[in-house]
Length: 292
Image (cartoon, rainbow, N blue to C red; front, side, top):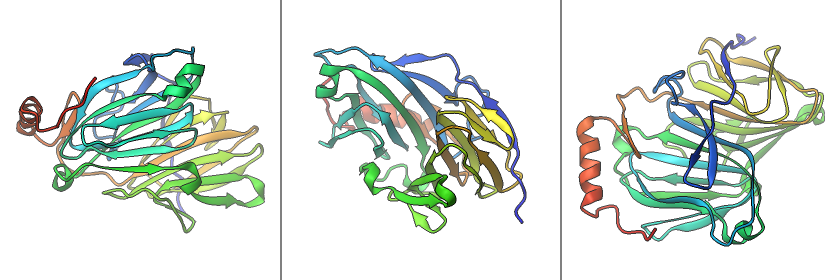
């Protein structure tokens, strides 16, 4: 029998702030330092936009042109539609349940906004954006995209009609997710039915957290409410999960990247000099051009 994995802390959502005029988010980490810069490595940042109603508009809300280098952005949509395009000519739209996995790597200019037709009607938006660090040897590789539709996720049916594990990245009980990652990552949606009660096995040395997207969930006997995050200690494998009503939980777990990091603004590098170089490259047009 595996050893139980204990809860390090349960975090309510921090104060919300706007990213551009289109995304109202709670920054769970790195945030105010409650969770240290390396604590959830390889995940560096989590912005969570809970269900927020946006009125109809002819001019889509969003985030203007901005650069990235040295990491990946992973955007998961639960409600609403988000569009994007970049300086390399890539573009796309993710709808409810879909994922946009962008490897910024050596650098892109990027823009994210509410999809045009969705904006005209308005509605509820709910999403998660993650920054996933890249090891030093991959930070200057070519940018790329992985547009992943929900129908492409790996799906594992929990026994006894307890729900479904949607595997975005990694592997659960022999079911693999479609996303490619540069370091070992497990990323799942647990879509749980009322009355579920099961044990989720994790890798002890992987940094692991849960974000409760919908409903309330009992984790190791403690109730975790909607929009709250659970951070686990790296002291065991088994996590006991149960529900009284339907719930959705995002599971993030990954092998730490044991390298120095130097974050600054929209860049995530290993040294101060690499940050200076990133700004020089940006100012010299090496990220390309994108109209705001």
